[in-house]
Image (tube, rainbow, N blue to C red):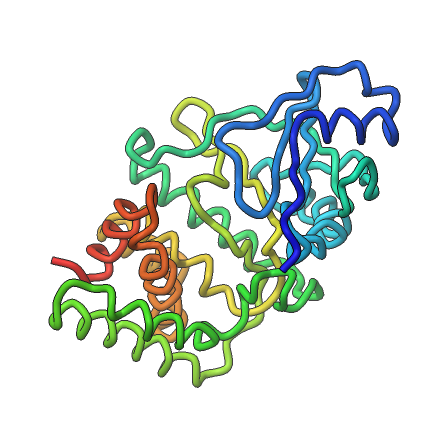
Length: 287
């Protein structure tokens, strides 16, 4: 296995000096908190460099460069604007992008009302789902988001063993069985974000104003984005989202399946166990 590249502020400064010399004098500093698929660095006050952390994330670069401008004119929230595409160099092996910096802080659910979260989900998904569906189909570029949730059945079966009790394992298995059954119906084809999560939503004041990280986006089964309804919404807000968006039972069950998979595989990870446990309680799995 190839080791991931060591990406530092010096890496970015060298790439800028080589490929964007007019920006070479600007200060470079890492963005905190950062993501997993990519490393981000502020470049001066107005730009951010985003570099894939491994080869598997490289296809997202060309996809975002092609589709973000199109999406930006059609969505009601700020999304990333790519102003330059960099090439491999200075010991860094992948293409990368320069983007406009979007002001705001990552969403902290405890500090934003459920009313605002509901408003955001309904508005964002209703607009996203209304777009023409001639975009990229699910695949490795989307980490298979937008494809059948059943792809992860083996991971779920393994993760079920990590639940503390027979009753909890049984409840989780029923949630997954419902998702599998719902996958037998051909889904409507829609745009999906692919990683709709608190860390990819930016807040100013008490309002969500921007959606970032479209690396997993594409056109397919939108159920993956509904995982947010269990990761970050309470029961009344979930019901409001489902009613306002008119979500059918099969799509809803597949969304529950995505939330279950995501929470099960992260339940024992340091720093993610608490959030995963909360999601499993919202799903009715944990007591």
